[in-house]
Image (cartoon, rainbow, N blue to C red):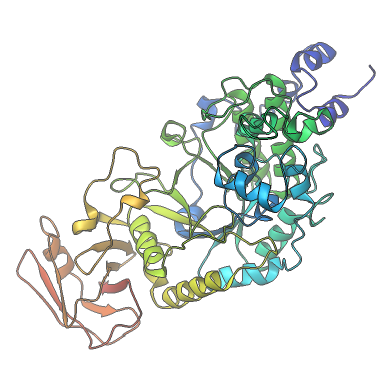
Amino acid sequence: MNLSRRSLIRMLGTAIPAAAITRAFGKNPLFASRSPANQPFQPTRESLASYEIPEWFGKAKFGIWAHWGPQSAPEYGDWYARNMYMQGSDQYDYHVKRYGHPSKFGFKDIIGTWKGERFDPDFLIGLYKKAGARYFMSMGVHHDNFDLWNSAHHRWNAMRMGPKRDIVGEFRAAALRHGLKFAVSDHLWISYKWFSTSHGHDATGPLSGVPYDGTDPRFADLYHDTPKVYTELSWDDTGIPEAWKITWHSRIRDLIDHYHPDLLYCDGAIPFDRYGLDIVAHLYNTNAAAHGGKTQAVYTSKRQQDAAVGTCVLDVERGVVDGIWPRPWQTDTCIGDWHYNVRAVYKTPKTIVDMLVDIVSRNGNLMLNFPLPSSGMLDERELAILSEITAWMRINSEGIYDTSPWKVFGTGPGAAPRAASSSFNESKRPQLGSSDLRFTRKGNLLYVFFMGWPGGKLTLKDLGPGGSHDIGKFDRVNLCGHEANLDCKGNGKDLEVALPPEPPCNYGYALRFTRSA
């Protein structure tokens, strides 16, 4: 075969073994184009350990994310493309009732029903900016193996199918127009195992044993060519072939090269050893080339060991770390399900504000997903939640943006230590009230958030050794949204602040302590 490396990579699905490419070039094509020695980072953990988190990320504090893709078309929740092939799941039952049996109408056919007829990225980003987001994240590719950009290496993409629009590109352009940092998410690496259910069949019923459409070799580049059905999913790369690792690398590198994200989110740990490290190094190096030699890009990993020293930023899914984390980190969570679900019960605005303040007090950022319906336009409940967040941020964002932690993140019942695992612990968090205090600081300002309205006075308790004495060094105290000076007195341990008759907002109130020098 007389093919260039680029041609081979373009052809590469799971059908071409990595060994064949290696024989064609004498070595793995990935490592034939490793980072030049004069670039800041090499694809090794030793080199990436020198990475420093850019200042913009630690100051931003709040981002909004849009989970939107062909899995949004049924409007029936997250992981639809996997669960529609799992007999007995509610999504399987829904699929059979609405579309037909997955041996006849599969996910490839769902893609064609996703049109995005009301998708207006400029309008959406404008709303998110008003709500206080300082960065926005578009989904790049989910576990469903469908690229949401004009992909150079994969025919299953949003420019060719579905809405026939460059979703990532349009979101990026809108984010830049509105002055937001742009992020993109990668969920692709686990797709080889995640999507294997499309190769199964019903165990019972009239179509028992009839294979689902994922077994059709014409669609192997969407559904993979996997010999095993992973009904129980292990979140690691065990059993994933070299060819898929190269495919993943090629597509995510293409995403970086054409859309230049300020942040690249990985749904998991840095995957596939050297392949993943090369992606991280490539993101940092290409970004550094555009910023005078110093990278301003962020890569996130959900494995603490990846983010402990240099390398990247820790991301905690649907959870909060204990205490003040030594380096900026991020929670990613959703107002309901990740993908749009007509059945979803959304978080209340108070819950969202409680989370934002709590996370920021621990040196973290909140990345909040608003899933888009199939049409591409937020529903009325989502718009109402955004409006509430907008109103709250208008009054209190000064205690959020550009802040750093105080000597303690907070006090009160909700500050108790959490479960050993920080991921997926948000459902265990108690409702925060007036006894729950959270602290942030900025220059000569200290912000004390109290998460419920106590009435005429607020007593700041359990401030720790010298706590009230430290606060007593500040010259004056105001309530954000109510600029009159407030009276306060302390006894060396606690501090009592007289509050105005009416609260300035609906929840999550911030005292601003100011020191003149």
